[in-house]
Length: 176
Image (cartoon, rainbow, N blue to C red; front, side):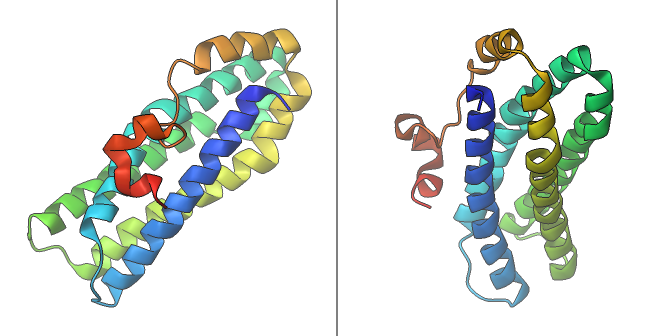
């Protein structure tokens, strides 16, 4: 398997683990139980910082290369770039709601939970679609030269949780 795909899959595993932790915190919030707001904030900061700004653009590069190599295969993947934009919008809405909760502003519990679950569910479905449709299509149609060119482009930014020396900003998350 090309190294770029290994990296993207590894990043998906990290994101999946964080989504599970976030979902546990949302469950506690929904039941009006004690939860770790700092952990929630750190998870959201991670998603705003890494997947939103670095991971999704890497996938967009792979998709653009796939479209150059085989337009039909890229079309079968679907509207990946639009999905990334939708996820980003939902993430920002949820982040704004969390900020309001942390500022002790009036945020209806049900609205907050719905924003959180919408983001979590969409992100999970999206990653599943990428792993089942997009990554296999890219692996099938891209050449070794394509992968080499992609590696030169995508390795400029690495996952801060993949390198514990870089994980200081996400200290709580590195322990999950």
